[in-house]
Every structure is written in C-alpha cells, then in structure tokens.
Length: 167
Image 1: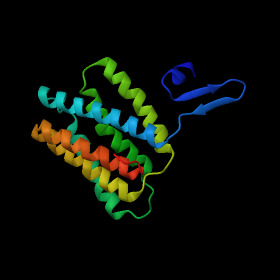
Image 2: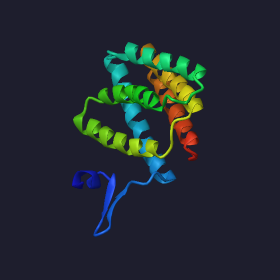
Image 3: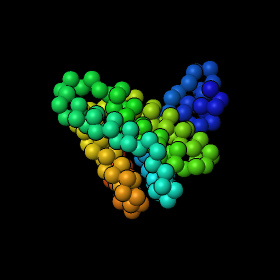
C-alpha cells in the first residue's frame, strides 16, 4: 500500500480506508501525455538502434485484432484489445534502454490501467486504435522517426478524444 501510495495510485484515508486514483480529465491527460513522451523516446531510440526484434509479431496481432473488430459485433473483445494495445506500448518502453524510464513507464501503465477500468473498450475505438497502432508500426518498420513521432501524437490525441478530454 505504501508503494502504491507513493506512486499516486492510492490515497490512505486514516480510519476510513483507501481511495483509488480518480480517472478525471486532468489525470487522464497527464498519464496519456507521459505515455506519449515515453513512447516517442522509445520509438526514436529503437529506430536509431535499428532494433525492431519482435515487431513483426506485434504487427500480426494488431492486424488480426483489427480484422476481428471490424466484423465482430458482440463487443466481447475488451481484454484482448487491452492486451494487444499494450504489446506496442510495452515494445516502445523496452526501447528506452534506461531502467529509470522503464520503471516510470510501468508505474504510469498502472495508472492507465485504472483509467481503462473506468470504462470498457468500445468496438469502434478498438478499430481506430488498431489502425493508429499499425501506422506507428509502419513508421517503425520504415525507420522514419518523424513519422513515428507524428503517428504517436495522433494516437495520443485520438485517445484523449475517446476519453472526452480535449488535447
């Protein structure tokens, strides 16, 4: 609890219990902005190092989920969507090559998980998120840092819009 409290995930209320971090617009904006900064740095560093090991599998997962999301009307994909979504963000975080930054990414990932629990993924958002991720992947494959940075920025803005938070 102390560790979670020090990371801003929980607030201890003496003699009253715990309060979990709120998913309010400012928190959402800050957490997603931080992820965008770390994703961008990870992409640029991966491109500079030419290290794209495992990206082909991530691309295949995203393409498959996109196909399913476009045809599946049941809406039973949220857990798969979150897992697939995280594969790209985790890939970019591993590209940071700095344990301090990676630790910060992991803490922010927990904050985003709390935010995501506030509302389920909608099929339409899964489709657009996978398309945005595939654009990031294409830029990584091309070794184009400027295109990767722009694609990450677009994904950030679209995610904020989906959450009803102005960029």
